[in-house]
Length: 242
Image (cartoon, rainbow, N blue to C red; front, side, top):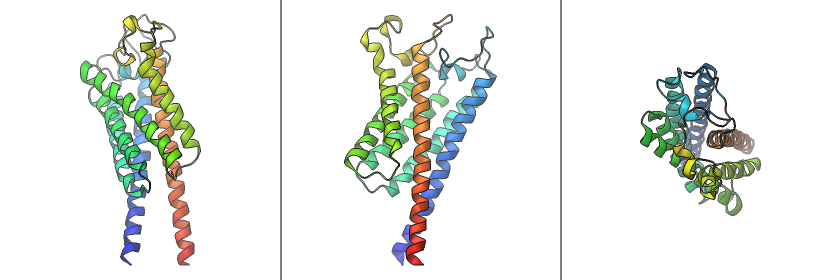
């Protein structure tokens, strides 16, 4: 009887965690979409994902809806941190623990990007840097979980994790290849406020959006997969008790 009660508690906590996860994704997306639609810089340029960065959207005095973006980044990411930490109670394989912990730290770093906009340059750059490092680490742990453990997520999540890893590692290490992508081959996370005019295809901006977009897409698929897994378990439990 006690074990059954504990099982119900775990399922209830997992369902609440998933709801917080979806709420976090919604908060992040609504903040980004509203800020992109309302963006208008001093020279009346519309927002372009090929040469404008997330940091510019959240720059006070430069973006009219900066507070919406930064609020969405902060509160949306914290909701996802809660989801990750709460999901630890469902983990049945060793690799699940470092994955969810590193993913929680990834979204904690993203929350710091919203808390410290580019107006607070050094803290903003530090948060952005660790967002990409921890996001890459999360993908590595997840791929290890898929290959060495038994993940209860869908098969497509492994491919999305690989895309996250490749995009984020490219963002971090492409400047070290001496390709002249930035002045003095500085890291991309230090190039978020390059003055206009800039190239029509600006790699720091494009790779930042690919890294962030792939992470949010991957996390959303994880949430749907976990929700589906919980529904199947509930159905099986009902059939077994019936």
